[in-house]
Length: 115
Length: 232
Image (cartoon, rainbow over all chains, first blue to last red; front, side, top):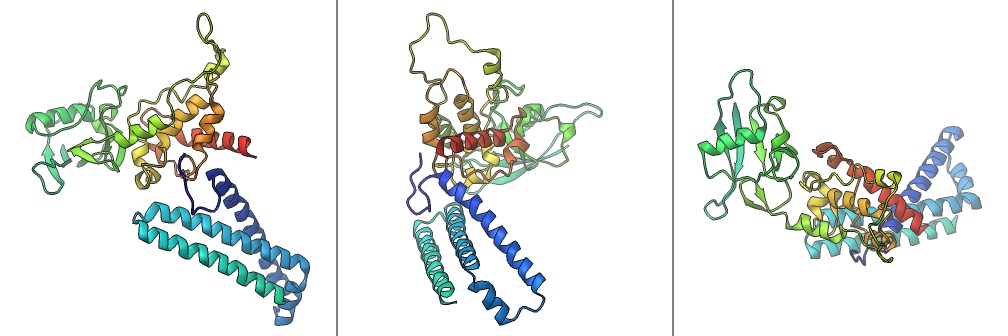
């Protein structure tokens, strides 16, 4: 058993499941947005506004944002533990990634709240 | 036939270097790489490598042959492009020439407790298995610990102290599905961290190089399923 404290989940299985589930959500969101852009034809600011004004889209967007943030945290944490052997660099990088993930999440909530 | 062989003696050499060899192989004949290397050792007695059984059973002569890990004793010269480039197994410290320090590899093997653990009363004679239960060990017990798979795995190169590696995980699964072993849950608990099993990215280098034709990636998949069943 290898102990880790900066990974998102405390177990490998936990991270593994989140990584796969978040990928599915991101795929669904991407497909949905692509469908919207293609089917709308002329994507005006008003059409964009109307799309994001619905509760469904707000929830779906937040879910997708949460998925990106968790996916990035897990993925970049793994990259750092593979390719950054120097402790100081690894820690600085992980701190940066984690803070950015949290900041992006808060920023995203604020944007969606304002629509 | 031309050979290019990795040489390094830490006591005298500042840096490793490649030494060129030339060997007369009679027209129409074939031999294993190990036999050729023994002939090269006659040319230069300082050339060092491990070997023992010379028939692919002991797993001593694992090395990188033309960029792919394998056992020299069961690799025919006719299957190789010349010049034949021979290097030590990648990712492990070199002791001398083609001899590597396997400590890290054995430590991972030790970590998975490669022996049967049973809590119940020992039976009067022996612990029996049905033919079906025994069949589950096929494709697992044959591992000879040559380290060809683990040293071809980038995840093992980067984290040899934390990632168990394909060889160790194949053995871990061999004991996880053994009907006589009662420590399944404890074994799984020991593997459920971010490194031990989950550092496997499924690139299947291990399957590609295994001289015994075993499939560690599949075993790792089975362990993951067992962890999933236990944790969901």
